Image (tube, rainbow, N blue to C red; front, side, top):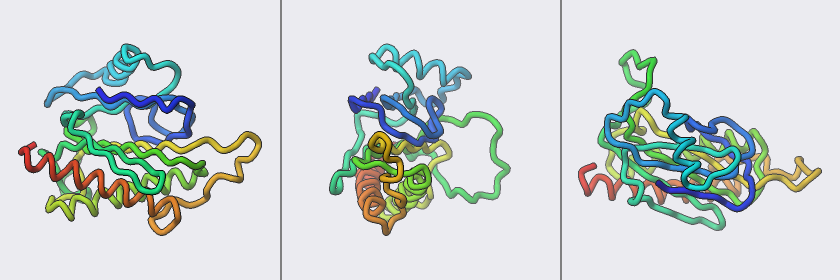
Length: 203
């Protein structure tokens, strides 16, 4: 397991099973599960694991079949991106098959980004899009013919706005904005390193 507790609650947006959505969160857990993991109570399982790690209050729980100890970290002018990658099952998002109504096998590129400034709600959504674009660019640069895996997840954590000053939050996080550009470069670098390491190991 990888467990991150920033010391104070952050504004987070995530696609995670546990603590997904948008809100105040105090920690992030990224846990490794066996290939073919098929528990139907994954959210409860993540909460139990987080509790064992000392988590208190609301947080975000991610899971992957990738080796979490192979995580890759990149930093760009205050933005930190940590990525774990399993790319044994990958493909393009717009595929002709019908899709599945149930949980998919865990493989997963998990992206955690920490931004040291406050982002508005819209900018947090924008940050997820920017991180995803940077991930796809990194896959291309790593020679992976795909936009991702079927179970990729992302979490962006930003500083809360100062009390009584919500309007001071950064309004933009697109790839050409100040903080979005830094986020994109950090995610690209960490994802590229994680995917090339995984590919070299045959995972």
